[in-house]
Image (tube, rainbow, N blue to C red):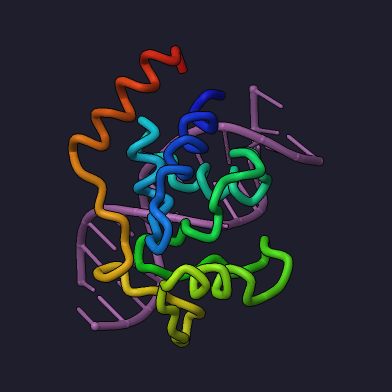
Length: 121
DNA sequence: TACATGACTCTAG
DNA sequence: ACTAGAGCCATGT
């Protein structure tokens, strides 16, 4: 399914020092309801080797259970390494989406659509 | 074909 | 602000 191909491209556009949610990636990839599939794809490495998987978190800013990364605090370390503050909560490691969430513009969304159309995916 | 699973999200109370 | 519960959909068995 080329949804994964599109999702891979979107993920690679998340700026260093910012994070995006699964739903946001799904939206920009043209399938707003496929947030779960984005998680599935990242977990299985279906989006490619070079995708910054650590920059994808859930809508509330919670890091994944870390189960998919090599070590428990891998995702946290990678994020802190690029300046993202991570704090602990009852539910796990979390980032403040207000401060570190990637705010894509309508224009960004439009550019993705035209790019995908041009690529035929 | 049928049913369970899950790096999710939205809504109602 | 918080929490269940429902909705969601590609995959795997």
